[in-house]
Length: 485
Ligand SMILES: [Zn+2]
Image 1 (tube, protein in one colour):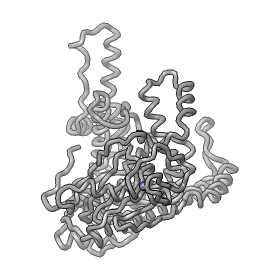
Image 2 (cartoon, rainbow, N blue to C red):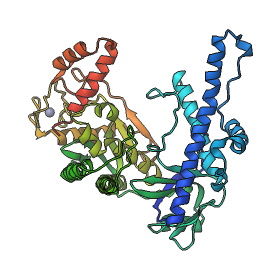
Image 3 (cartoon, rainbow, N blue to C red):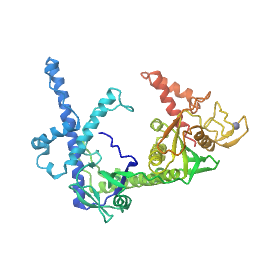
Image 4 (cartoon, helix red, strand yellow):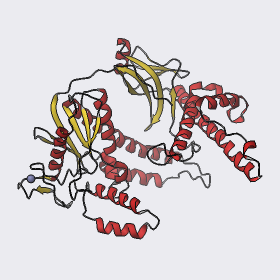
């Protein structure tokens, strides 16, 4: 789908509200999201049918030019084909009229994007992990979601209801003033709305074009370096030398005992079994819902803590320096994945990025992935060749500075801000990656366990290419660099 370009002086922003639907509305919400899934599956089947047909024809020796034509996956062609099929296809007979056409559009647009991603990934035009062929969405697993782009989409003037096409007016769980106030003042225009079932609740997320309203930060001339870790979630050092530590709330760890109990109860009850067609008992469903509530609570607590941290940071400092961590790589370390995922490193970076762009004229600087933030002396700039992980205090051989390891790393990141100054320093929409030349001995974060790792990789990965093995090792060593923080 084409990315919407807001008019100058405006940004596109999301406003998300929890919904409080009554039974009828909830039923309609589920119906719309199910319709989106049905349309998605129809589109996947329709496009791929021509692939299978062609392959079969090739085996009969039919010439290339007389094979069945490829079916296109552009949104207009999917829509055209779907609008014919919905009247004739027995899968849609008798119910498709119950939902807004936007529900089917959601599914078709998603299928079109999925085929696009697959094709671009296959031809190397798309960055990131390889995208597979679009597959059917399962009724059991698919996330319930549906997007409305046309029709009556509004926040009602009472501040407690929203209106969506076909679904009608739904009560919200929280006041909608944040968006309503702007719509009434003429500084926001709603572009689309997405309803979504998440963590046992329904949410609506409005995409709106909003007048960019930059709030001045409290200390525009101060830069802060943020060093993320597991033991302490973040160590923040600013350019005046002040150091602050944010403890890791560890919500998941705190809830683990509770989860274990809840899971034990679930497994003692009669659960569903797809092989035998066994239906879950009412007691199982109750226990499962109780277990899910614990998971949802952890997720909500984590989200709240991260938002508070990132909001406070971007509202205070003129420049924020973070490390460009390879979070996906670190999550591959199974001894650390749980803690890193619980700390939400990737989410912190994402929130900092959009909050610096939308709300404040804060500059966000990402330090190069291999910048030796821990091994550099924050006093004189000497770089140590080695700094084993168990050494928690940095002692400089050159200037005899003695400082906590994480404080030192955060101070180094803060100092990087000076190196990255470009122009006036008040532009908000820069996300600069500072390329720092590699000092000797700092081509990776730590060498503590490298020889053993390499030997393991050599034994296990007979088919891996040498360079793949090396990157893998790097990811792991970087994750290990965080173990003791
Ligand atoms: Zn020094």
